[in-house]
Image (tube, rainbow, N blue to C red):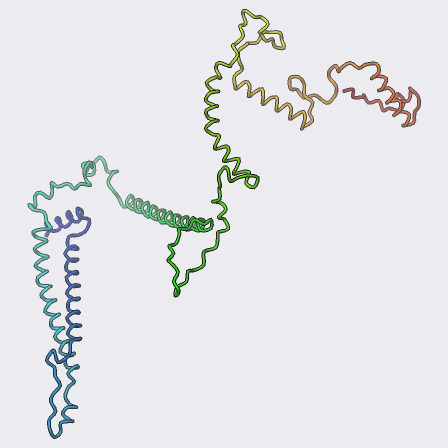
Length: 371
């Protein structure tokens, strides 16, 4: 019994199913075929005329012939009863024969075909899915952590269950995306064409389907079809047509760029080529790096924003002034000064004073902004 169980375990792991299930499937198939054959025989006998099977009506006799004929059994009914009884007996004999012979078949197959001989070879066999596995660490006493426990098995089961759940969710999401894509394609008129048949008098041709409201998305047109009615498509088509020429021009300019760059000035031979900073020190004549250029651009843009938008007054080095004049302004001509004095005189006269002394007596004493 131990060897038989070992054979069953090894063959089940090798085939992926128990060997006895193969024999059961064969026996079930034979039983199904036998049942179909019996049903066919029964239907054939029932459909045959009763006279063909030997069931004829009895002959009428004199005297009480009518009563005897009435008491006689109907040939069709008698034939039906005989066929059902015979079919049942045939089914019993056939099923008993099948069970007896296929029991022998099962015993022979399990002992001589679906088995491992000799028995000693079984312990030295290694299946293909065990290749490359080191099974010695499982039996060693120093690697108890690799031994599967109930917790690790439950953890793996949970992972498998979550993986199957995620797979089901992704499958459902894919089905929803496909249905949505099909709906969108039907809206823009991308549904597969349906084969139409020639109309006939009895089956007239159905009316053509209505045009999709989004079918205009496929009317891209060409460069010559566009115009003022479709400026975007025309411009795009023209740009795409000139793309190769633009690429060739860009490549040629890139090749000519090193030759067009100005040579660096020689600071030793030409003293005028040297740049001087605010302190009078000579600056380096090297070309500015892109980091320096970006820094200067950011500082200039920030200064313009603070002065024009925020209304701040910044000094030369970016310091914020207090709003008062802190430096020398431009020089004023004599006529400009006279004009300003006349304006102040007029304003002072309207406020209640007259004459040139009016502004000095009526003003509040605040300093005038001369900027």
